[in-house]
Every structure is written in structure tokens, then in C-alpha cells.
Length: 331
Image (cartoon, rainbow, N blue to C red; front, side, top):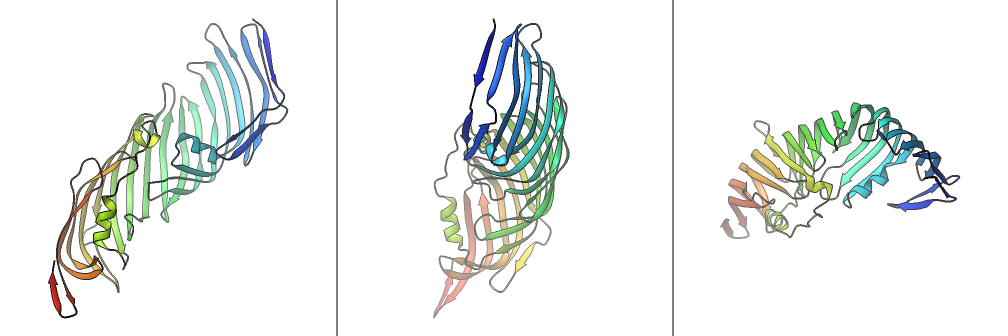
């Protein structure tokens, strides 16, 4: 068989990014080999060069090379809840049998950003370098900002028999604004491991400080937590990341300002998936004050329990008092 394909003009719009070829696309089939002539694709923050060939018999020898820069917004095609930005530059070559080619090259990130719609913290100022080493993409240096704190990433991605991840993440003084009205400062050590469709995110989060909005209402917070949750599509990547993260507070964790005071401890286990997380454990309050249904109460004792294994559903058990006009109220 012999043949030729020639597209004089090639254009597409992906996630709002307009891409088009410079000079068209030309490929030939001859002597049981498909050859792609040099292809140049440009777009917003995207400039891609690629060429290669593939033998159709014997070991199906692949020879392919690509380089240039890509707009990270194109990553939004992976998940409708994903928001991405920034630029990555790369240079990669693949040579060898199609089922197991040897790869070399590198990927560099410059000021990238990634966030998921229902995850309170995203990643910004992503900088670093990944290097191809045969069947693995190794993290040589990768940092990102999240909640005002610095995250450092190490490990690798293997891709010989499907994607497999073994990545570690450490961070210090990461601010987490969740739930609404509560802001925590935490140190974290996390580990992401597993195949593309069965990833496990595990590790520990140490809460070192927290603050409470003066307008935070415990009754409204409980109602918000019991609201109907949106369901991600079954094939969404967030459904394939399982969670097993232990959240604890540092000894004698407390907070006090002009609006409220709280003292207690946190011991929670984050389970489920990124798409459908659940919390198990409890938050104990030894003393403090809080807003409940529009009235400020002094807390004598309080516990917030999380016992539902399939969703985040707090059960609040408190003993509180308040003085309203001429009334002493015990709740």
C-alpha cells in the first residue's frame, strides 16, 4: 500500500484556545511506514513542532520528536471541574517499539496554576522541571504555592503499562479556608500513589492555627453541610483519587480575638474520593463562644462529630448559655 494525506489548513478550538497549523499537515505511507512531515501548530501561548514515523510491520518501530510550548488551559479537557493556566515548555523524543519506546527529554513549568471546583485550595505559581528517563517522568524540582504556603513535590510518573504515580508532597503554613467562615493554618505531608484509575492520596495534616469569622453561625454551617451535593461524572479523574488523610491539631491549639474565643482539639480522618469526600472523627471544644442562629453563646462544652462514611455530615452536640435582654438561655 502507498498513499498520501495533505491537509492545507488545520484549525481547532480546544477549551477556548484557538489552534492552527502553519503550512498544513503532510503524511505519507510507503514501504509499510507512515511518515509525518514536520508539523507546526500555533495558538494562544502555544507553539508546537512535531515530526516522526511509524513502521507497520515487525516490532512497529516508532521514531518521534516534539518540542515547543503548550498553554496549560488545554488540560481542562481532562475534567470539566478543572481550571488551569500558565505555560509549559517541553522537548521529547521517542524511539523503539511502539509498545515500549525509549523516551528522553524534559518538561518545564513556568508560573502554572491548577484548581478543582469543589476543592478549597488550588495550586498557583507552579515552577519546576520534569525529565523523561526511559519509562518514567521524574520530578527533578517542582514547587507550587497553595493557600499562601510553599509546596514541594518529589517522585515520578511511570507510563510503560498505563500511568502509575508515586509522588510525595510536603508543605508548611498552608492556609485552608474550609468550611466558609473558618480559616486554618496547617503543615502537611502527603503521598499520591497508584495507577491512573486507582490513585490513593494519603498522609497527615497538622493544624497549627485557626481563625473563625465573627459572623460564622453554627446552625447555618450545619444546614450548609446537609445540602444536596453535586455528583461528578463516573469517569471524572476526581472519582479515581481515593483519600486517606489524617487531620490533627497541634497540642493546646486555641484561638482568641475580639469577636470569639475557642479552645479544643481536632482528630479527623478524610476518606472517600476527591469527588465525594467524607470525614470521620470529631472536633472537641473545651471552651469558647460562637454564633448560633443569630445569637452569641458562651460554650460550656461542645463536640462536632463526623460519623457518615459516605459524605461530610457534621453532628453538633453542645452545651451553651446566653443572656438576651432579661432572659438567661441554656441551649
